[in-house]
Image (cartoon, rainbow over all chains, first blue to last red; front, side):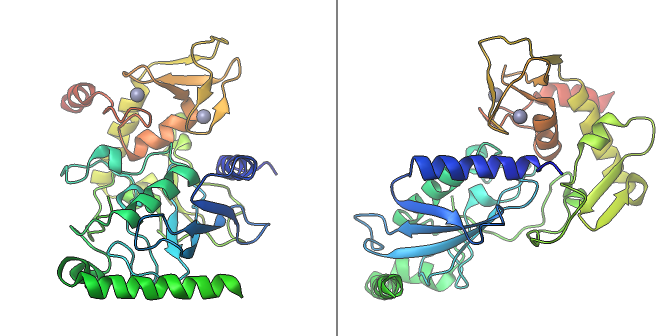
Length: 169
Length: 148
Ligand SMILES: [Zn+2]
Ligand SMILES: [Zn+2]
């Protein structure tokens, strides 16, 4: 049986990322036999509160990729306005496509079938550095980020420390 | 980026798109749902696969959905097509990241970006924008088509 296009495309990306790793994250599969489920380790971006942390994430691709976006989840605990407490990432480029009749999201910030693991991760890493508090996924984190930044920093620092301990074992 | 409001989707094919759940590793011997069938089979009612386990014929959709899908298919079919002739100017389809092979069926968008017909048609069923330049695929064409 020939492989679906989505599997071929993901395999191509995996090979490319193995050959030419991108700064800021490393990518592989959760299970070598399943090209649709990826495990990515994000290195906390320098000059941000997340610096020094190692955040493990999972990406779940649908068979209709690249027509539909993957879902992304942080497995390592993280405190961020745009990441749900259960780890689900809420970022507009991962929203399902559909014709936007309301115009509240710029077209360029929506899912497009040219997005790859690399471009998704670049967006997520920039979200870590620059949270968007307009429509937060973690309301408590967003409130702290706005109103009690010291407490926000403390919680993030705890996640960073925990992530370092996890990587050591 | 990052806004995660909960909203009811206005996706034209929300009915066809099936569940949002991610595929289980063992499921689905049928292959990915394909809107190609809708585009290529014109004589009999098109069959949709809202999810791998569920096949839904067009007659099970609401009338409004059927009309929207038919209009969308009609619009897509108005866009020019051709076969790749080995031209050096275009080489790769950015959706599948594959090189064009001589004889491949192509579709040309008004912005002059070119894709495999099979790759772009499925996307245009979801959103009428060019994946490369985000140019809307001729709203004027859509309007004139809808008023016909
Ligand atoms: Zn293609
Ligand atoms: Zn274009």
